[in-house]
Length: 347
Image (cartoon, rainbow, N blue to C red; front, side):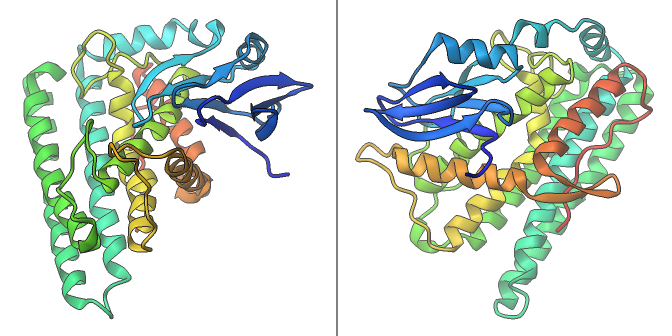
């Protein structure tokens, strides 16, 4: 039996219960999935009509296993953590303080640099396999990747200006988001180039999208979101106190900050792989993903999180890299590290 580290329950009418040191997902007396608690890292309830026993909740809380709740479209709406995991103080105080000085500027710029670099690198990755058989597509992707990378110089200049003038994050956020947005336009142009024309992709759309590719991306980001939030909590950081994304009640701005460098390498890459292999993403008559499609997409993202990438001189699982990035961020805000270096994937 394979080791299950991330248990997902999404079938309508299924139940998660605790049985002799493991969690089981059952439906009508049939076992759909099971995971020994000793290996389990997270539980995700992704859909309506799923129940969980008090014993299962307690077992997860006692072992520090978070329980995440996603809507059918992949929108996270709640998480359960053991109270002990959220009881840190020193790191959070440092995180709040960093917002008002140069640490906040450096973090925001670094996270944006990671996002833009990984977008450019994914375009280059998609292009290198087309160099011989699709030379025109290769050249288009290469040029778009270079245009995306051009915005890194804008980030460098913005950081120099912000630090020189003694800005706070609030005073440079508009410029930063403008740079990110213009880089993203070039990036999604490149994505359109490699998508099959049969998908009739309307362009990047977030919440509320009904086309299959945007729906797949949005659901995949929801799975990634839970992994990033868990990493931040384990590192002692507040998921709701970010730097790039503006603070609003109930908005997990730190999760949204740290997720940015990981969207392209963890979600966009496997979703593009499915699309280019002609894998059909099933939707119901209303345009929502079916249970089978949600399972397929979740498995694709979780498999990608198990893949290894070079990081700090070693090959590490992407899931482990997310955790190490959260810890590096925590040490930076505590002034135990001079710089925060974002994860940049190889292409």
